[in-house]
Length: 292
Image (cartoon, rainbow, N blue to C red; front, side, top):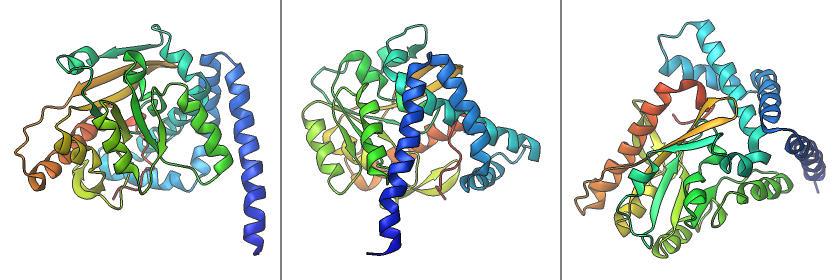
């Protein structure tokens, strides 16, 4: 056994103890206080991380009119938002249950005319408070299979999953080899499928994202084409502090019946919607992504 293999589990235990201890403390605080603390801490720590330079590079590439100072401020605001998401995580259910903190726009129109026994695909990205993205299924009580990306620290991953399950009306499933099979089974049962699809997907197809070709997850398009179910896009916008607005819409589709045409077209449409939202709310998107 190598030294690395001996040290790794110790490192994971210490890391998990620190992060979970902080989450436990934040969970005891009022929502607004936890949100502010998380934001201030991450605003200090974020710039010290390797991903900070990637965020600055991405901002410079896609926000060319920004000055160097504006790019730095945008990156700091991004880190603060990410920290707020962390601070709010233990309070997710409390936030969704409070109409003064969370409200929706477009959800009734998006669901209008869709029978209860029909499944659907709901996509979002790392925007605003992305941990609240299962909100529609939670609020209407419709089962939803949510996919998430595991963290390497299994101890930490198990506890984070429990936080997420508090607002999940169905299963939380880690992305993996059988993800598509699980998604197909859920759709056939009339369930929703929830995915964050704004990160690089090595097995995906190439589609423009912020105007530049990027490997993109095309599973949502495949499911929509195969089962002829609705496609929804939603973003949890941070309005002020720990107050949010869910912007939800059903994507208009014009299927030809040819997957070679429909899948790239739908995937591109999703990316176009994401791109427009990011340019409108650049301070609420996670610019650290390695998309291109």
